[in-house]
Image (cartoon, rainbow, N blue to C red; front, side, top):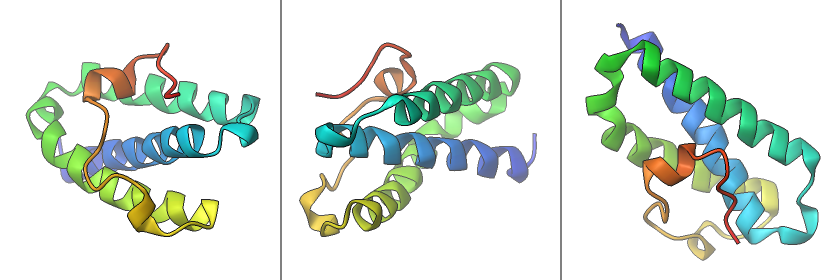
Length: 104
């Protein structure tokens, strides 16, 4: 599998992490659209991982890059300083992809 698959998965993880951060830090704004985005990105990421086993060994690095981008995007969307968010991703990949996980 090529670098385009890696980029596509990293983009899905980034969007997923943006919405997990917004879910956690803006509880009053939670809604069905955010939940739908979380569900669809989880489904797509899981499908990509199942279909492309060569991506699995790269997950740690992809998560690191995706989280850095997600913090920047989420902070901008929420109108907060990026340093309010944890420097390191607070969730393990298994939680991020768990369809029943929504951070408090």
